[in-house]
Figure (cartoon, rainbow, N blue to C red):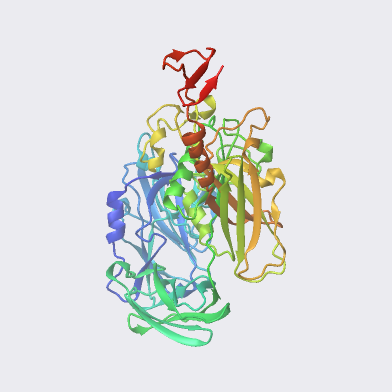
Amino acid sequence: MKLLHTCLAVLLIVLCTGPVAVAQTTTMDYSYYDGTTDLAQTGSGKKETYDVAIHINQPALTGTTIKGVIISIPHTTAVSNLKVWLSKELTLQSIDGKKQNVPDICTQPADTALAFSSTYIPLDQPYTITEGGVYVGYTFTINAVGTDQNAANPLIVCESQNEGGFMIHSTKKYLKWVDQSDVANLAMKVRIDGVAANSASVSLPATIYTITGQTATTNVTVANYGANGVQSFDIDYTVNGTPLTQHCDLPAGQQLPGEFGKSTQVAVSLPAIGADGTYPATISISKVNGQPNSSTAAPTAFKVDARAFIPTHRPVVEEFTGTWCGNCPRGYVAMKAMKRLHPDRFVRLAYHCNDSMMVMTQEQFPLSVTGYPIASIERHGTTDPYFGSDSKGAHPLYIEREWLAYANQYVPVDVAVEAKLSADGKEVTAQAGITSTRAMSNAGYKVEFVLVGNGMSGTGNGWVQENYYNNATADIFPEPEFAPFLGTTDKVAGLDYDDVVLATTRTLGTDVALPNALEAYKPCQAAATFELDAIVTPDKLNPVKFNKTKLDVVALLINVATNKVVNAGIATVDATDYRTAVDQLTTTGAQPKQPTIYYDLSGRRAGAAAKGVLITNTGRKVVR
C-alpha cells in the first residue's frame, strides 16, 4: 500500500476543530487520530470497492452506545455507494462471483458530502457495545481513477500504529481482510454515548531509574477516558511504602479533549532514595477535574531503581556502503544528520566495500550483508540506514525513531574511551573503562575496539559517489545534508567521508574478554593498539589514505552469548604529541642547509679547492 503525503489543509482543519468535546457530559469520540500526527492519503490506485474499519475493543467501553461516525474521504467525483456499518466479525461472502463484506450488526447508506467535509453521520440504530468489542467501518466504490490522485488514494490515514486501527478489504487488491495497522491507522472517529464524565488512567515504564540521594522527576502518561476530558488531576503514589500526592493543572495547550485515549505526558516528582537498590512503587489517579476518578483500574505497580550514576546509552549504528552504490547517498546523509541531531550520543561505523576506503572484504563484516546500503543498530538484524524499517518510505529519516528507541533503553554498564597517537605517528593506543552500576557474577562481556577515520577524501573513481537522487527534491528528502545530491549529477565528487572503519580488533583477533565477575562501580580496563602502517587494502597491495590527526576510536561492549552490542563509547584520538613532533621537524630539521662559501685572507671569494689558508662564511678557518 502506497502512502501519499499531502498537506490536506482543509481536512486537517476540520478534524482538529471538530467536536472533540461535546456539550453532553456522557458523549465522547473514539479515534486513533490525535489531531497532531501527520495525515496521508493511501489507496490501491485502482477502480474498485473498498471496505475499511477500525476495531473498538476497550473493556471500559462495554455497555456504552455508538451513536454515529465521522469519516473522511478526499473530494472526488469518482466515489459512489458510500455506506457505514458495524460488525462483530469481519466476514466475506461470495456474491455475484465476488467476495463482498457482510456486516452482522447493521449497514446504512451515507451521503458522500458528509464524508468530504468530515461531518458527523448519525446511525439510524445506535448500538450498545458488548464484550469483545465491535468493528466500525465504511464502504465505498471508486468508479474511475485516471489522473485523479484523490480517486487513486481515497483513504485518509494517520501515522499512528495501534492494533486494530486499520482493517482493509477491496475487490481487486486486498481480496481478503488485511490488518494494516502496523503501517498506519484510519483517521475516522466514532461517537460514543454513556461514558463516564471524569475518567483517566496513568501509565509509566515498569522501572524508573534515579540517582541515589537525589530527588528526581519522571514523565508519566495520563490518558483520558471521560467525556469531560482532563483539565486537572490528582495523583496518589507510593515509593518504598511512603505515600505521596501531587496535583496537576494542565496548561491550556496540554489539556485533553473529551476523546477516548487522548493522552499527554506530565512530570512527577520522586523522593530521594538513600541507598542503592530496587524499590517497589505504585501510582494512580484519584481525581479528575476535581471530581473522583470514575476509572476502577487498580493502581499501576512499578519499581524505582536507584544507583550512584545512570550510564549513558550510545547505540552504535553500523552502515555498509560504497561509492559505487547509487542508493548509498541516503546512508551518507542519514549518518551525518544523526550526528548533527545527537552529537553526544550517536555512534556510527561505516564499512566500505569495493572503493578507496575498503579495508576488509564483505565476508569480514560483523553481519551478513545482502545489499547496499544497509545498516544495523547494535547488531540486532539489519535495516535501511535512512528509512529504517519503514519499507513504504513515508517518513524521512525514520532511522532516527528506531535509534531513539534503543537510546531510551536503560543499560547497566557505562563505556568510557581514551585514545592517543604516538609521537612518530606509527600507532594508536586505546583504553576503555567499563563500569557496571551493579555487581555481576556472570557478566559475559568482551570489548571490540574500532579505529575510524574522519574527513577522508581523495581523487579518482574510488572517491566519486554514485548518486541516484539527482532528480529528487527537498520536499521528499528535507535534511540539509541531502543538498549535495539533489538537483546535481549522477556522480558526486569532492565529498568528505566520516566514521570510516580502518581497523578493528575483531578481524585482528585481539578483542578483549572481560572478567565474568564485575564489581559495582569499579572500572574494568581494556586496551588495544593499532599499527597505522598495517592499514592497507584487503589485497595488502596499497595503503589506505587517511589523516592521522582525524581519527576516532570506538569501543563496543558486546554480550558474548548473543553477539549483540550492549553499549558503546567513542573518543577522538589525541594527536598532540604527533603534531608537536611534526612542528619540530618543520621548525628545525626541515631548515634548508646554507651553502659553504670560501674566502682568502684578502677577503676575496675562493673556490673550495683553493690552496692556502681560507676562511668560510661561518667563520671557520680551513688550511688546504
